[in-house]
Amino acid sequence: MKTKFDALGVAIRAGVDPQSAATLIGLGGVEFTGAVPVSLRVPESDAKRLEE
Image (tube, rainbow, N blue to C red):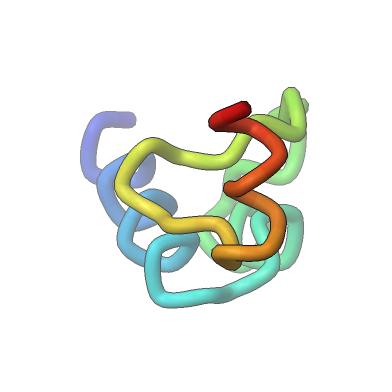
């Protein structure tokens, strides 16, 4: 399971759609919260409103 979740994290950080990545890796039943992983940066225009 750890190997699959590690692979999922790599795929998401690479920009792959999370649900597509989960399905390809064999984690099709995983539910996503919609939160952005902390290792990813949101566009500066979106981040500005979060920092105000």
